[in-house]
Image (cartoon, rainbow, N blue to C red; front, side, top):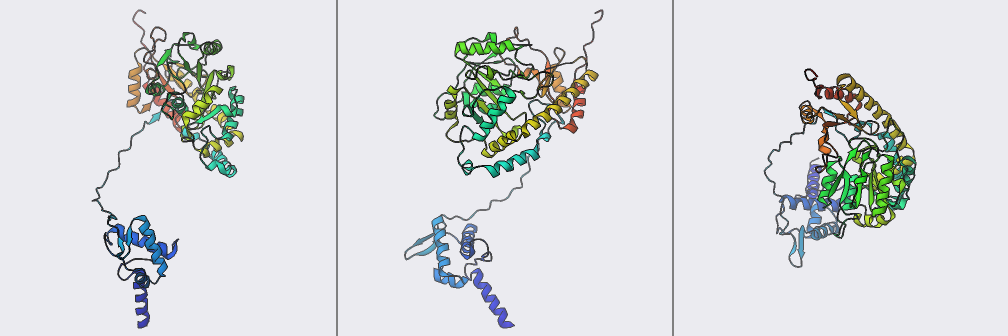
Amino acid sequence: MENSRVNSWVHSARRIGADLHLDLSESSAPGGRRAALTRALRDAVRSGRLAPGTRLPPYRSLAADLGVARNTVADAYAELVAEGWLTARQGSGTRVAERAEPLRRAERVPRKAPPRARGPRHDLRQGTPDASAFPRAAWLASCRRALQQAPNEAFGPGDPAGRIELREALTEYLARARGVRTEPDRIVICSGFAHALRLLFGQDRSGGGGVLRGPLAVEAYGLGFHRELLAAAGVRTVPLPLDEDGARVDRLARERAVLLTPAHQFPTGGPLHPERRAAVIDWARARGGVVLEDDYDGEFRYDRKPVGAVQGLDPERVIFIGSVSKSLSPALRLGWMVLPERYVGDVLGAKGEREAWVSVLDQLSLADFIVSGAYDRHVRRMRQRYRSRRDRLVAALAEHAPHVEVTGVAAGLHAVLRLPPGTERSTVKAATWQGVALDGLAEFRHPHAPEEETPARDGIVVGCATPSEHAYGAALEALCGVLPPAEEPTPGG
């Protein structure tokens, strides 16, 4: 019994290294004893147990101490020499490298977690779909099919034009649903509308100018973020007046391009009048200009017939830009540009030789989602849900604030509530105090929009889609609670 204990102790001492205290207990891990010895030596140097300049035992001695083959020690030493942890010189043996500084453990100071930003109790901001309605099961099914069917080359460097499967699917879908006339070779995939603007107006990879140059005509009301993006690229924007028929395209002059939301003007609502759709194409042909068509809310319409894309009138004069940010989710970062033939090469040149923004797997999944019919089913389902939400908003206002006019609700994911003069700022402030997030109409007005042609009006922009279904009723109740009262009639009036 005593001899057995002694033998066990001797075996253990050899296993951990009598002099270096190297623990090879993980020798059964991947890589075997050589990998375990390499890790043990590296850890000993890193921790400072083996100081810089320390001479290590010869191969034969350490191998005998550890009970391993001499080649195992030689291979471990060679690997650590190659990594820079050890040095080996003829006549000097193997030593710990002088530059292999041990890890200095700084005194740990407890860090407080940053305070979490407190979000609004009721989110009625525009521009975001109901995140809880994302079709997880259907999207997962498309992801699986796309991954199983993807060719091997799909896992290499991405084509800057985008996957051909998605461009072919979009060619068919956009023709059927939006009246777009195109071919797969004229579609370039991007990560969304802002990315499209950057590709069209930003510098190309060689540092040269963008595909398009200003001045650019824009609608008098629109997203300030887009104006800021264009200004950063050195593009001057010229506001076009708006009326009940949309942008006054008859005011186009020497601009080289015009950016429009003809399907549903953002944020005031309403489609561009048919005569103006034709007129802007005539302008582009006569001036050699181009129309940038933002297909904002083009798929969500309720009380009117579908309005086809302006691009269908002249594919060589219109750049059609769309995305899944409203129909599916902004988290997917998937969009597209349908380009006139003369711009395709320049846009691809601006994008670079490889896809750097949009996941190939997401592209393949979206292609399957469209081809399988799941995208159409999702859009139809969400169109019904958002129409119901629109109706609930209108009914709540009719009951609690009949003096507030609701506009722009025939399509889209938001409504504009017209307020009594001078009450917009106080209403937005009251909403903030009550935890209701919404936007004032003035935030979307172009800073140089002429007052005489597009008079500023008080209003708020209310998103119908952002809250989840169970939270929408409480959000409407809170909204009605912050609206200004009706104007009192003047005495004797």
